[in-house]
Figure (cartoon, helix red, strand yellow):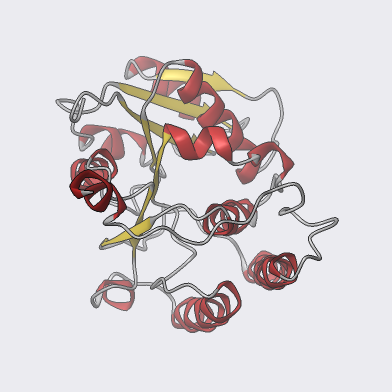
Length: 264
């Protein structure tokens, strides 16, 4: 628990048996109140290992996709009373040791969402990120910053933390069940005016870590651009048929808003 906020870590898992135990061992259980693993019908020992480790588990009866896995993660965390939810991939690519600072930023009241950025600093390429992924990340992020009129170092990290308010506000069930879910959700968050913070996060790229192949990377990139274009059109009043339909646009709030209000 952090500042009276119940902290839940969710692990969207698919064939993570080789890395789950290492990931779990570094989760700071002195501040984490609940750990939930959602298994997307793995074909290895992921589910049985999670149960042996004492992790609360939810199992999909068939493979539904990365986005669908997250939907189950967040829904379950809210049902179990979480105030802060941090998504951590169980493939040991992102360090669990940053859960405490990410949770603290969310509990502080300054931010509604916190991202673990691989791009801040020099960690991405040093950690083994393939050059083509790095270049694609930078190009997509630049385009998104322009179309969303925002400024993030990257939109594509899989290490994310949210307050309960955000998860209850964003219509995540309307989003894709595939990898572009992350970008749709983050774009909706910015559209709704929530405050997004970033923290530098070293990452590891190794054989056992999960990644999407080149073909699916292309499909993901196209989906990201479609979402960013949809955001801009929605700002101009043409949101019909997009993930922004029905959402009320709000200008981003300043991170100092709680303090300003207190002083007033």
